[in-house]
Image (cartoon, rainbow, N blue to C red; front, side):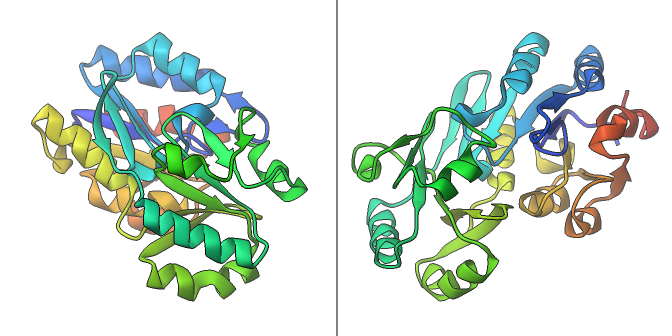
Length: 262
């Protein structure tokens, strides 16, 4: 494939969050793509406020062209928003009331910040892995646009909540053993990518994407050429057209080289 643009997931694709590791090969790969006139972009479940500094600096240094955040709910092309899909305030309010009744913690993900229902030990355990600027604010959603919620729950607890979420038209994606993303059922990174591609006047067949997780499955299956990381989830590997080496083995660079893209 000869893509016009390549999208990269962040966690466990470009970057290891638990060790704060971004291998030098990532910058080499991005610069090589740009040297061939191929656009580069990030496609992440994270918000702008939680993109790791090392990834942020690399993106700025290499001049990456686009950014799809919050699982496709908020997307930028050359710094300009091309997709903004906030959640419905009434829907958020009902979810909060339901979770409050169960004594469960949650968070609101805005375009540039995260507000939490409380600074409990469980909330801090999960969020300290990805952010250092979250704050307490139960009524944040009444004054700010919210693109996604987080619910702090283990697998069994989420099973108990699933009927309510289904009735509300919401879906869950796990990213931590004690936390899930909660967003509109139809939302995915694919929508954010499509908004960028359409703004460029291209189509999804022109896109290559790298990912590893469950929230990458639709993206990998919908773009022209999906590449799963060797360390990725089995579902991601099955959705992709190619599996490259793992993130700790310079997988992105080696995958692009093996496929003849760079």
